Every structure is written in structure tokens, then in C-alpha cells.
Picture 1 (tube, rainbow, N blue to C red):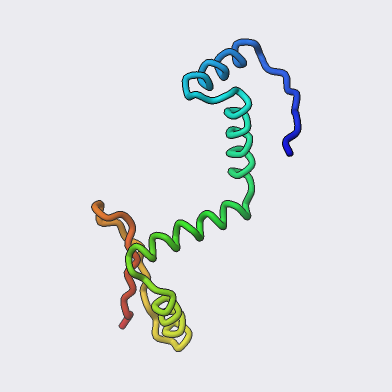
Picture 2 (cartoon, rainbow, N blue to C red):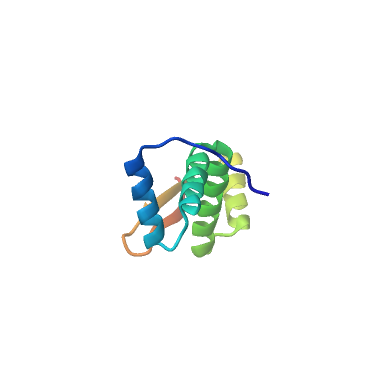
Length: 103
């Protein structure tokens, strides 16, 4: 169930928000609600970390990197075989994760 919130803003700002909302086919409440949600999510560190993990996981999956490969790299590092892990950008396909054995 939603609740109401009263705020005070300058008349010019209210008119601009209303005009932009109408242009997008939204209500002023919809626009303010979206802005408040973005404001909260930009300051919510837990949500930021969750989003970051989702983006990283998506990129790794798109590159075909599996959980087993990541676990294998971790085990190699723990065994003392140092691996170099590089996140590079080739300009065409976006970021790529590359793992190399160090000598």
C-alpha cells in the first residue's frame, strides 16, 4: 500500500516536472517516485554491491567463464602458482577477463 508525502518546491520546478512527466506519458508522482528510488539506490551500498556482482557475473558468463574456471584460478593461486588475471578491453566486444600463468 502506498502512502503520501508532502514536499515544498518552487512553482517553476513543479511546472517543469509536470511538463516532463506529461511528455513521457507519466504522472508527476511517477516521476518523483522514480527519482526517489534512484536517489536511495545510489546511496544504498548493499544494493550497489549486488548490482556490481550481477554485472560482473553477466560479463563473465558472456565470455564463457565458468565458476569452475574461477575456482581453478583461485586454487592455482593458493597452491603458489601465481596467475595474472587481466580485465582488458579490445574496443569491440567490451571487457574481457584473461588469465595467464606467471613464470
